[in-house]
Length: 307
Image 1 (cartoon, rainbow, N blue to C red):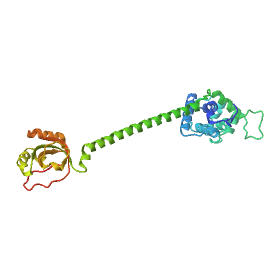
Image 2 (image 1 turned 180 degrees about the horizontal axis):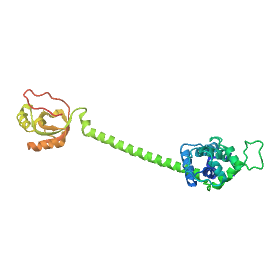
Image 3 (image 1 turned 45 degrees about the vertical axis):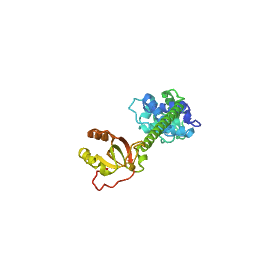
Image 4 (image 1 turned 30 degrees about the vertical axis):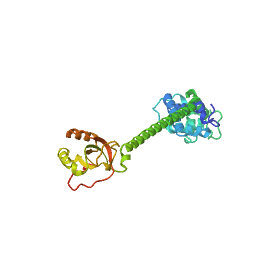
């Protein structure tokens, strides 16, 4: 491997070029191989999910992100002189030294290559004049990284990108289904509300709507007063007298005199119970709308009490 050879490579090449070398770098610095590989894969997925741009700059940014986010691993005995020389440095300096010398990254800091070089009897580009009899530090580090590097994963980035696209499509479909279901529910509720208006509010035009059971008819409220007082002692406030003309909803074929005596409630079950209590078969029972308000008769005949 040529040290610092990420130039002219792109984000899509990370699995082939960057993945093995970044994992190798972390292992040379002291990480366990499996832990290092898992960290790199997780960091790549996180960076791509965050919208990392492609191209050469994307590759450089991803490499620095993966190395910079690596935590201090559990202590592992160094293997070989390169790992032994690096183990004398703090974790961040180890990663920065190898990353700078081997991968050419700049965002991790310079590291401490001179100390590692002295420990290995190697030279660095910072020494002048160089002793050509000494091995080059960057080459030694690159060879150590290559020895620790796993097999490339050419499809790493494309596979993650494809998985992200599938996830977005799945979420879009799920959202569309939820919106469709919500629209259907709103339509059902709106239809139900309109149905309720058809049954009651449409008839009332702002008036009172109740269930009414008509028990008797008469030409005047006075003609119905005795029976109204009698029923009032049995069912109380539910009995009343009123004009047929003040109601809509009884039906066109109902026999009518001008006034009627009835039982009224907002609840049909209540009206049915009252009818059973007084023991009279109604002339008609219906949900009706009151279209006018009558003044109480002067003779004290009960009128509509519950509304």
